[in-house]
Image (cartoon, rainbow, N blue to C red):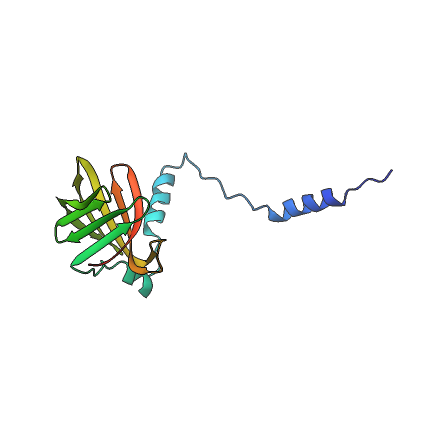
Length: 157
């Protein structure tokens, strides 16, 4: 009777090679162990941001009039200043609400309330396809009404 040990030996050797040495234990009884670890974590120098990451940290330079659209379900949001007009196929003329704009690194966001539910429209720079045409839009849109989140595209109006 032959005993085949080569696969077993191979697995044992592989496991032995991939083992890492355990890190030294932290002496929790040392009075300043936690404080020392916290100070080290807060004072570790960070690399300088690259030019690309600095550029993405700038607020978006968006057109004064903006239109965001989404498909399935179909929706649109036109933004001019502090007014957002939200429309659907059931309500094509739309409903206008007052919104506040907030800028962040690489995005702009408008927030207000629609029929008592919080509405947020977030615009980010980047190519976007509506999935139904060959058109490529310059911005990506995320529309949130209450817990419902829909994605879409945006362009100048």
